Length: 497
Ligand SMILES: [Zn+2]
Picture (spheres, rainbow, N blue to C red):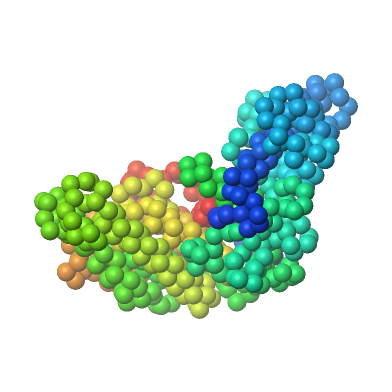
């Protein structure tokens, strides 16, 4: 088979990428009170919820009639007609006309700016014909909206209805949910992460919505059911960086480290990233962890450290005793987040500097034990690292793939031989003192020795590594059960979702 002619019709890559920025609504920025604004938001949400579900049931009926031959064509429901009908329905059932009158004055239950935004975002997503055929066949149930749904807010062409930086530096948005004056809200921008702050700056620095910058596309607001805080979701897009100088045959492999947070290697050379690159932060995290441990032990034994440092009083309450450790835990979590930002930035820069178009990392779904003992240690931290890495990589046009970690630390990266008995976790468990066994290939023709982290990272930096390992296992007679993956060897590696 001639494999060189296969890649004839590759679909055009998207030139822009879409993402969402989440910002908390801090307070009203006009003369409204929170009570007033909250009532308005909840009322609009209730009506959006009613209208959206009305639309869905109408859509179902119409489609059913069309399929059974009762109606010649299938027409999607008319949103503004439904909006008028909803007003009548609300009029018959409403309990509090005073708060509603202000809203329902323009012919329907909702203002056209809201129905426009609704039909542009949420309802349009539901109009796929195949989806409705599945509903009719009973393959999937009729979708419904929940009361606590996200409310679409129209993003007007006028820049006044987009995110705006005020002279005092605060960021506001006029919510197009009712007639002028639109409620203006102040957004919480003080404690957002570095990544979000950078995105926000780019959005605000492009007031004319130029195509070569970051553009605000649409907004949604949603109330957090637990904290009762309202959040704004900003959908934005930005141009995908040209990836001309990146090659998808060059791969960076990222392996989880034990004494060092991560280890990265490149497929076309001997460059590596690890050990020293993140030493300072790693040391800080270890120190915080030690402090927490000492404090916890001391609390258990009722020693000095159970006295709250702030008040110098020794309370009997659990809260007073645990508060300092919780605070320490918060600092550890913050340090890990900072670390993940640094790690992801370093890996992406490393890949870019070497012209790599692909980053491969371990897919740890369903592998509980895999993280124990690693520096990151907990699932959410690895997940966070993946997320950071993914968005930073996407910005420069690098693809992030998840591959199965099976045998990646036991395969010799030089000759491909798999050493079943090599146990990385056991090797590193006592490694804090500096002892570290080397990976030694016992294949007599090879004899390759390497730092085991580098060896594993090098394996992860191999294209098609899952298939290669599977085939090697067959060759060596290693049972498929020890691989524990499905046998679907044609599956391409997953992209991080
Ligand atoms: Zn070897």
